[in-house]
Amino acid sequence: MDVSSRVLSELASREAALDAQIEAAREEARREVEAAEAEAARILRDAQTRAQAMQAESEAQLGAETARIREEARLRAEQEAQATRERSSARVQQAAEQILRAVLP
Image (cartoon, rainbow, N blue to C red; front, side):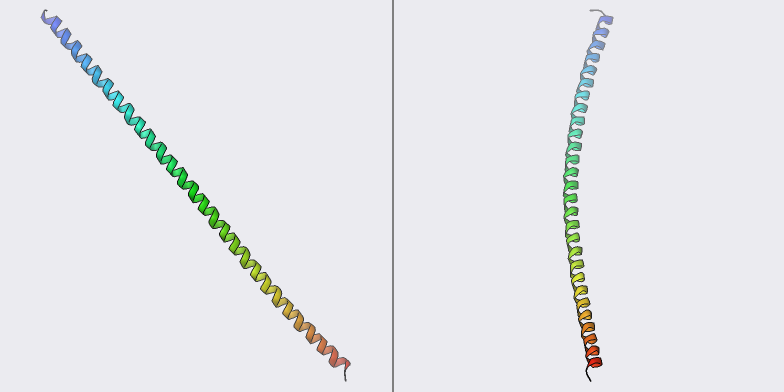
């Protein structure tokens, strides 16, 4: 083998080694991208699960707050109705007393 053949052979050998390194780097990059995509998918699933849990908790709190407000409104309405009945009863009694005073000597 002459010098130029050896040089060409050496260059071909180096090129093959570089090609193998490039292919290995591509494969490693592909695995890293797949791992990153899997991690991103896991993070997204976790975030969706948390968001759903937070939404359910928020809805439960809203429901409880709505029930509390309704109960307070019902109690206030009952109290106001009772106060109105008491005032009406007192007025009726006053009117009856005035009528009796006016009618009876």
